[in-house]
Image 1 (cartoon, rainbow, N blue to C red):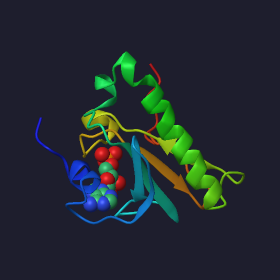
Image 2 (image 1 turned 120 degrees about the horizontal axis):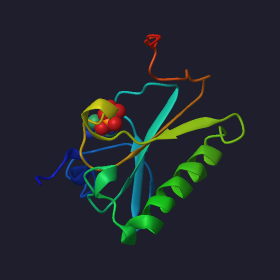
Image 3 (image 1 turned 135 degrees about the vertical axis):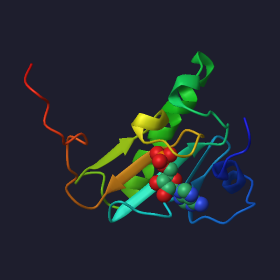
Length: 121
Ligand code: AMP
């Protein structure tokens, strides 16, 4: 699979507003924020989709949530609340094929994301 824009951010080939970095993960502000606070947490390892997560990646994926919570605490939204969500493939809304947690906060977030009324059978 060809390199995505997120691997370029990991390699510092293109700029991003980096919020956190360690050996395993990187967090940076989303370029097109969908909430007052919107950042992404990615593994440095380029895993294309949730479907490609291997058993050996389980602690890595858990680490992404730990980073999300750390930044949420630093930004003062841990108690008020936030959403941490990962889209998968086309119908899930994924556009960049390098897994990433979206972390959205700073206002009450709508739910559910699927608004169309389900037809009665
Ligand atoms: P998704 O549609 O779930 O794959 O999310 C991809 C996200 O990456 C979108 O919210 C984009 O706004 C964001 N994005 C794309 N390019 C960049 C970039 N260069 N820097 C920061 N965020 C980006």
